[in-house]
Image (spheres, rainbow, N blue to C red):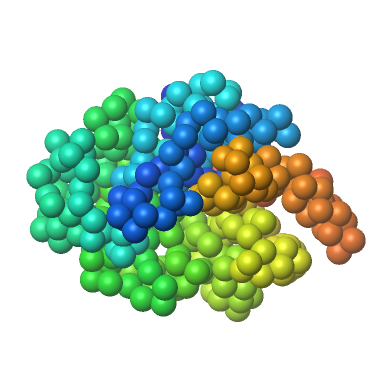
Length: 335
């Protein structure tokens, strides 16, 4: 039976609904705590829930929370928010990028991952098999000692580089996917290194149609996109509204170009709204989680229509059909 794994339960793909494929709802990353960067601490569940309620009010049904264990995840808080807001949340097992790892492992996680001083120690001193076992447990048993299971597995790499430990986690995630069938999400810092990540995944015999490459809108390059998309992989445009990285027109034009190239079934959308100043209700009056549906989506539909495309049909595909296909667990084949 085909299913998508949410925080609450496994659902059929047709129950997913309109989906934001990349967000952070409550997170307290140790790295940013140590650097005293308060903006990157989403640490008030009562304020986060107000933004989720905006998302629901404008038609949102599901959100992928891309917060991994090394980014200060709070599984129980997000679960409670999801229930109160009426949002289906898909959780994330695995890892982020390595520059976050030179920080102390919080005491509450040591019973889960072992008595390591830092995340770097954990990744470096554990065998691939031990790390695979950890990720598989997060998908099949629960995240951080809970019974709340992850619905995707994740790895990350830094800007224009892949460290040996990051390569190790890519191989861990590839092998965890084979044991669970969970879809694979990749953090590409500033949209870089996706092709290099892809080569490592292919060396692990991964079917690229299970993979979504994140932050593609941070590196607008149609040739680069085509090389990824022709493998069957998903391209995640998950920085909508972040005009400090480039105008919204560039993102939408790139998406439309991909659609005209025939890759409309491989595009995902999200906000990666991982700062207090991006949220609407943390007191900074940012765009918030409702903006994608209230403001961005009508513009996208209009620009598609002006380009001779069916904007309404494409909105359904990018926000409903593609997420449901990507997030569906794949059948496990035992050798």
